[in-house]
Image 1: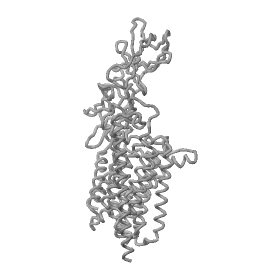
Image 2 (image 1 turned 90 degrees about the vertical axis):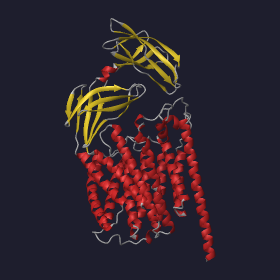
Image 3 (image 1 turned 45 degrees about the vertical axis):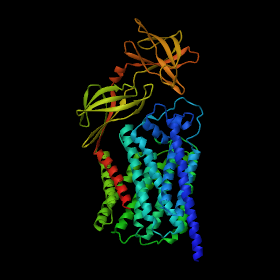
Image 4 (image 1 turned 180 degrees about the horizontal axis):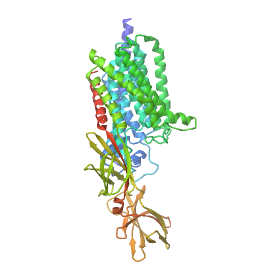
Length: 639
């Protein structure tokens, strides 16, 4: 018998050693691939499709870094990198047994399949001298850090699942896994919550629609796993002294990670293309993600079913007045909220299967989840008070609960205590909106031509709403003006009046007219590139005669032609009262397309329609998010 045990121990040691080697080698391979992708990005290798799509020569360094995860292919590689790094750490530090590490590596292999299917190293169909660059909306520090934070949370949620499967396969009644799995769940909860906060703050600060959470299906796809992670943390805590709760802990670990994959499927399969501003375009990866999610969920549930009879089916709590009952009831309600959000975010998928695509609106979520949220907050306060009296709760847990309560109060106050008013504002004219004295100061254009600002003076304080511009001067991304006060924010989102712009095609030898001028196309001049801009292949300059009946003036608008398109800037004429931009040239060079627009000064002084909102005590919400994150880390450190 002793000899048999010795053989088993040697076999287990060899297995564990092999798993460690696999974990470390996998991490090094993925790290090398990630380093190579960065090499391609920073050396401007635009013969690679991913680099050409998300980077460019003039992209600032911080956004070259974030270009790594700007697209589907890079974000999957980032996820795999973080997952592999965590796996190598677990293996080297002996944090998990062979069964659990095997489960973790199987998940890693499934993620690797996705990366191989959506490789960021595919060659470009056409080699460009310069890349497209990052979407101006994503060129924001908050969005630069948002995806890595979320993917750290996603990767860490594979740890409790792996512990769960490892224990079910080895010794299901062993409770040693609970503390380590709970630590990983707490860190995942902190990172995923921080990622949701960063995304919400970015939406509030950049998109200009007046809020931070729109119940968008892609937003909800990260909210559901976060809610279930809260359930998982509490189930892992209760299972320490109530073995019957072990079954719930295993279920929570399984469904939390399954919904991480499901949310990724929704966001990246193209299913939500018509229903979400965040969704990626459709691709073949959706079917693979659905298959992987099915494999993980079904296999995990089969293993749990196989071992389910090991766990007792009673003794979940002592009485209805106990902390355990309050906790279980509260977690049940959170699970209900998660189910409601799951149904809402999945509605586009369900209805597309019936060939009647539709989505629920934000009011569905508010009506269904708000009453449950109020009950959950009340239960949390009661349970926390009971835990404090019996010293059942640590400092980190207390901080998290306080942060959640502050956040919920802030959501109610900022969401229902503010107001919104829309009015057209004229330069220099003072108006009163929502009790605030607002004067619109017109537009300011940056010296580099990359942005313009709408300037407001609000109660004596100047603020600017910034609009990023494309190379041709068109609006690319708008950021609202936010005036922060002790009582909350005053939020101004401008909607510029449609500018008077006339587009016309002028044929050689023909005269085109608008209400003020006559235009004649005299010829075209095509030259090779000039200056130091290597992206410019040639400069096309048109010669256009313009007359108002008395004075004839020659205007020379031009296009800087690049390998991937071209840009043109307006040229002033008529004493600066008008501007002209060349937008096209026929193949036979006998026709040009131009755009005539008002002067920059006239555009700057044009009235704008502004939507002004008040967000009372909104700063409490940002503070609450930070409190929850910090509290989660403290709780994890004490685990």
